[in-house]
Length: 427
Image 1: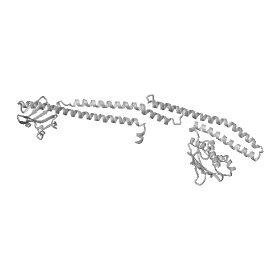
Image 2: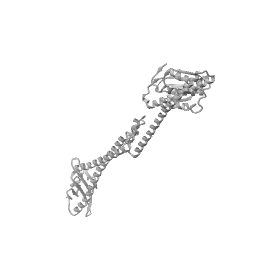
Image 3: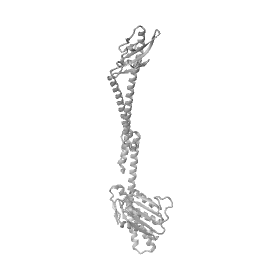
Image 4: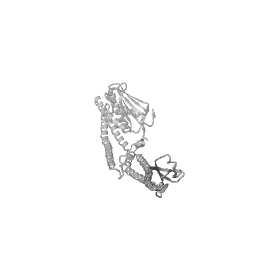
């Protein structure tokens, strides 16, 4: 019921039912008032006619007429109750004065009856009038005709209300429903334009134009982002390949211990840059064909390679890295993207830990990386210890993962990536 009352899609039918109900109520009230007004006016007319005929009857009785006299074709007058027909006499014996319409069950018509008195030569006499009121009241055909007039008026009101409702629906309600349906059907489609009826209100026309403008701007921004990632990735790949090749040539020659460490650092940084380039290309492909990305199972060897590639600083600081795999997740992310996410978390944990070990727990739902550093000094958030976690948070949102960084119960921090995994691979 709440959904029906709150939904604009049901508002049109609700308004239609409301207006129809109002029309029926107005029709019933109008017909009732009309019928009561006719009945009341007929009674008042009969009473006033009886009072006029009374004056005429009294004048004629004073003039010498006696008993029963005919005032006109409708009214008979009496100056003696005993002369009144017995059917009406019983209503008069207990009343000194009476004025009203009397209907008898065994008679087809009714009479307007008046009883009063007048004085003549010091004596008081009764005066009774019986008037055939049915002869001047509406008959059945006239009542049916007048009822048809009322029904016609009600039907006209219903037609007017329906027309007003239809016009309001076209201009105010249906455009809103149409825009809502287009928003739902065009979800994820940045190129489809919104359309609206020309009969819609001006505000909806402006709203549609602005939505189309915002969608166009969003589409251009997405294309620029994808183009930048694609072109930047291609432009970076060549110099990185040159750097990596030159570094390997240097490594073939005998170097001092210091130079050898620098060569290893250059090689590690170059590998990270290549991984980032591959991840950017993977993101571009994902955004362009998100539904076509195949689901793949993460292998234990892939995780071990990621840990090894990002553990150089751990060896320098003599930190132990422990990898625990309960089960392996199934993801749509490319290996380079997973390498960037987990690698950032590992390097962040190494930078935050002075001594001890770093534990990596993997199962089909999540990956948790726990360090033994100083922990978060302020409120936990995605920014954490470094800028790399901003990249992790952004990639997690793109792939529908949940990223959380919090203080560990004992010491340090725990970074958790929760996947939307659909398959399980036991180790």
